[in-house]
Amino acid sequence: MIKELILKNRSYRRFQQEVPLSMELLREMVEAARLSGSARNMQPLRYMLFNESADCARIFLTLAWAGYLKEWPGPSEGERPSAYIVQLGDLDLTDDWWCDDGIAAQSMLLTAVENGFGGCIIGSVQREKLRSILSIPEHYKIIQVLALGKPDEKVVIDEVQDGDIKYWRDEQGIHHVPKRALQELIIG
Image 1 (cartoon, rainbow, N blue to C red):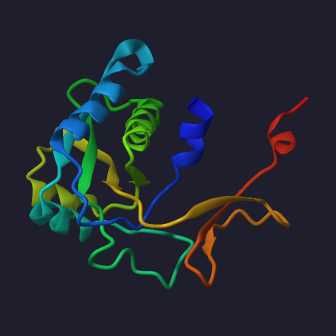
Image 2: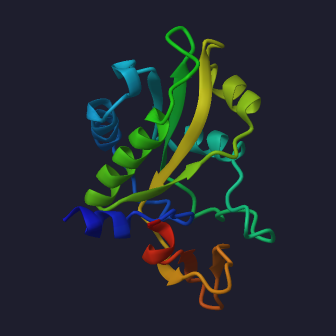
């Protein structure tokens, strides 16, 4: 059921780094993105796939991990992603991909979850450093990076209390994500 996949599709930031994510699965994830809707059917998104540890280590250095967890520098060695997908916009086609990036990212992450993996969409990227490291041509804009692997943390959904939507970790390291109530979202 789709709701079960959505509930399992959390923003995981700690992984079982030693568990590989195959290039075949990464391609399957991009296939799900390819088959998803695209505004004007422009299909301007492109992807770079990485699952080699040396590449993952270089990409890791360009990412910020959790804005609300100010004291946490990101996953430690052994907890880092075992794969990444770098999502790019092809500026030769358009500089406006509307909502395609989010649709594609969700499709890819749901595919990962369906296969026992998970990930996190990271928008806080040192883009020029990443461009240099990966030799990304200038006609591709770096949109975001999907950090992927076998999740190694528990993420739970809580109800928003007193308007505070900031995620947090408790003493056991459980990651809590407050969500607004359904009646707050539906107007009229």
